[in-house]
Length: 326
Image (cartoon, rainbow, N blue to C red):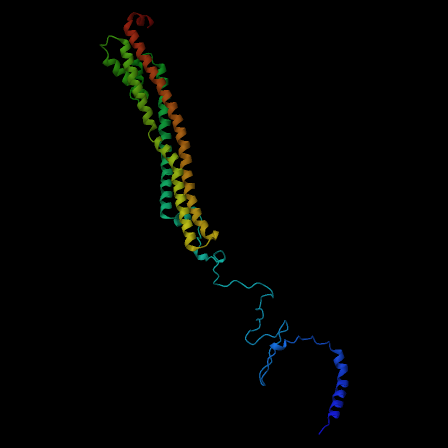
């Protein structure tokens, strides 16, 4: 058997030979031993427990971190999962978005109430321009007849001359002359010329008012359209925006590309209301001034007819003066 002294000498020789290689290696970090009470006995065949601290090796139950995927830089944030519940991050399906945002496309995609409002406003606009065309032609013809009648009255010296000048003609002034002639004929046996003049003036004033009312037919529709169309269009806008907000709550998204078409369709109703209202108000004001000017011309014609009647009555009362004037 090897003696203890030989074994110690062999260990010393082995340490002397290994000392140059050991001097070149850095010293190993010192490990802190656990307290004596925490040291557990290790059965033969069991693995040693992992040392505590930062140098602890990963356990077998905890998998190591997976390497970054191809095309993804190290340290980049991971992409959002497809099932993310964030509404603002939800992708919008292009198939659900309207492709035609023209006025006709927005009209076809609008709610049935908004469609009804737009159709009503479009019909009101058609009525406005129809009344404008019809009343413009009517006023032009009436003004031309009044100007021609005033020239004929200015050249007449008596009611008989005026009756002969307006024979076979139409218009308000021809009606005035016929009414005055009929009243003078009906009052042939009257003893008071002033009573005849009063009755002729009363009859002509009623005919003048009737002619003004006839010309004003249709202008009330313009006033109604001009005053109510903006509010009708606003009703369609409010209804459309209300439906847009209901759609926002159903889809649970605030994406502008989803909610903006509905709001645009609602605002189109207000735009059509203004398109119908603004021309109606302007045309109504033009017709109101034109009818007032026409009634002033009718008043001039009525006064001219009354002067002819007064002249004939004075001649009948003083036949000598009338023959001397002739």
